[in-house]
Amino acid sequence: MKYKRHLTALEAAGALNVSPSTLYSYVSRGLIRSEASGTGRRKRLYRSEDVERLKARKKARRNPGWAARQVLHTGDPVLESAITLIADEGLYYRGRDVLHLASAESFERVAALIWTGDTRFRFSVPPRNILDDRASWSRLRTLKPVERFQALLPLAEAEDFAAYDLRPEAVAATGMRILWFLTAVATGENPLGGIARAVSRAWTAEKDGAAELINTTLVLFADHELNVSTFTARCAASAGATPYSAVGAGLAALRGYKHGAAHERVETLFQEAEASGSVEQTIVARLRRGEGIPGFGHAVYRDVDPRAKLLLEMLEARFPRSKDLALVQEIIETTHRLVTDRYNIDLALTALVRVLNMPEGSGMALFALGRSAGWIGHVIEQYERDRLIRPRAKYVGQRPVI
Image (tube, rainbow, N blue to C red; front, top):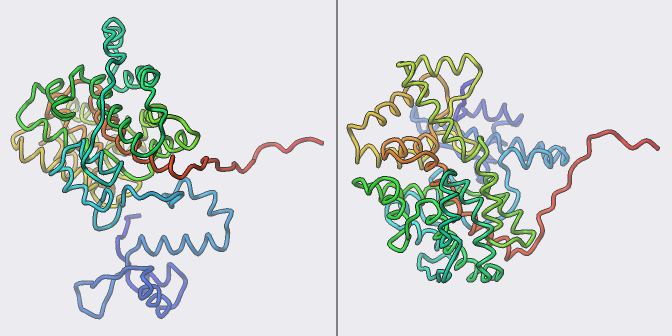
């Protein structure tokens, strides 16, 4: 059934099993948002997501056990954070519009904002690190960048004794060293002139506008509230793991095909469309097999992912004649015509990698490098909270035989 963003008063009251007067009281208390219908000032429409949220709250009050079982799967809040706000009107880091930050600030300054609330940053690079051992480094070049991250982070942690200082300002300094290190691991470049520029030099030969596009991508990926990899990183930090280990935990979750590796599934969709010569046949074949369309749909956004919209607009402005972008647009138009899911950041990331002709594994590496900034911000919050994340399991197995 097609998702309806708005409901009439009759539909909203019926969904909640309340009278119209009770519905209006919910609106006056700010529990449900209403908007003019456009067909007359007296006729209002009501946000269906607010109605669903209120229904869930009422059910949770009646059945606390159900609420506890649902909370880790339905997107309901499970802990407090002051980093990222995802709202109908936009996406914000520390109260600042992410789309503006992505166009106006460097990734390093945005990372500092996430960690400290201030875009200014200072950090010191260790006098040596594992990358100075060129023999080891050459053997690791056969791995994809994210695999190298996972292989080398524990070695970098062992050499960075300052990482055991878990006070906020010390973790922020460690965080910048981690971003520096990951950039060097991914590209073999010294990031002194800026992380995005180092990536551009290594992966695009500094194609026109590439550094700006890469910087925007890193900022857009920097944080997205409590996704699975961020929650994993927070769990590690709650146990007292260092920032290096917490980032390593986040990387393990990120590599799953339902998270960071989703970009690779989008690339497969592109290849299928190119091989068949028909985008529509490719999409329809997937739907007939009962498969979703990778790059479309999101657990948070009902409409187009605003991060994806910005990145695609920037790509189109810079490369208006790109054949890859023409394919992207055809995939979007065909999929939006056939299903209700709207395109997301994984589709835009795949477009970026293709347009800039970046190497294999670079898409997930950009995701991981950007999201590491968010993980470190959440790690700082978790250290300050100083509480172990330890949910209980509801046992449903065989009962003991007595």
